[in-house]
Length: 97
Image (cartoon, rainbow, N blue to C red; front, top):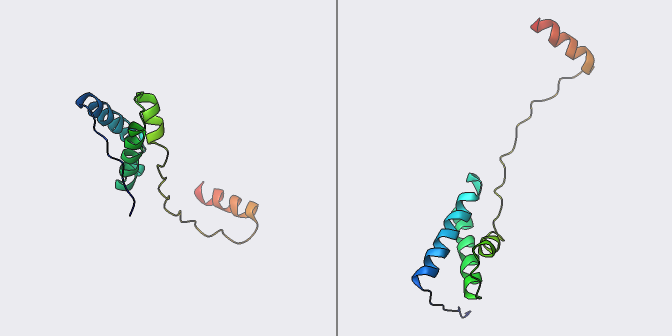
């Protein structure tokens, strides 16, 4: 069992941390605002603050470190028509004209 470090923060520090957390989460693309990414951002933010960091810009940078991109859905491709691609192109143009 690992022992976790405990820290005490003043209300001003908590307000700063809350503002940084909100800013970082809001800056993420919508598909990356997952629960797990928000938790990782908060953990990184608290770890940086516990190490003594109080600069908002540095807190933002360290909070983003472990944000994981969300897998993109697989694109469905239509099968390519068989035959000469130029002939197919001309046939298509003739059909649409």
